[in-house]
Image (cartoon, rainbow, N blue to C red; front, side, top):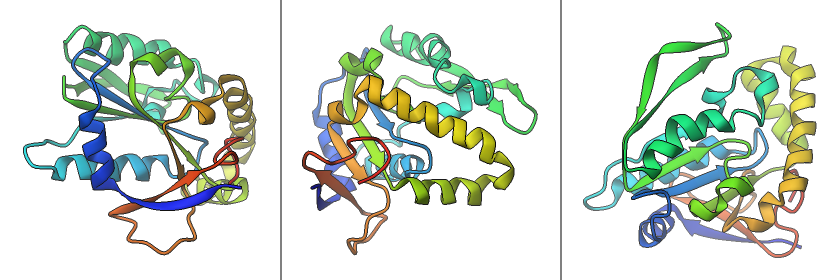
Length: 218
C-alpha cells in the first residue's frame, strides 16, 4: 500500500539545483505519467518554485504534446526532441523546436527557443523514458486513477476525442510496463490527492511498493 506524504515545491526546487547537471550544463527534470494525471500542473508549479529561489530565473518548460505530429506520434516523437532540444543543450548550445498545432494539424513556422539554463523541465508521456535516464537530474512520475484521468481529458478536449484517447491510454499502459518508468522514478506524485494541503505550495508524494506501479492507479 502506498503512503502519502505532503512535501513543499520550494524544497524540491532546492533539491533539483543541488543535483549535478547531466545534460551538458543543464539539470534535466522529466515529468512523466499517464495523460490527465496532472503532469502539466506539477511542472508549472515546480517551475514557479524554481523561479522564486534567490538568484534564480524561471526555467524553460517543454511540453512533449507540442512536439507530436498528431495522435499517431505518441511515442515516436523522441527523435525530434533529441535533435531540436536535447542534442544542442548537451553541446552547450540553445535549442529550438516548432510547436504542433492540434487545430491546424501542422507544425507552426515560428520556432520556440530553448535557452541553455541551469534547469530544463520536459513534461509529457514518456519524458522519463529509459533512453534519457542517464542524463536526468530528476525523474518524476505523476499518477491518478484511470477514471478521473479520462474525465479530465474529456472535460478539457471534448467527448469527440474518446476513440483516440482510448487508443492513447492503451499505448501508455504498454509503454510504461515495458519501460518500467514508475519504478525508476526518483519521485512519484499523487495527481489526485485526498490529503488537505495548499496545492500551489505543496504536492503529495507517494512512497511504498504500490506507488504508481502500473501508471494508472494509486
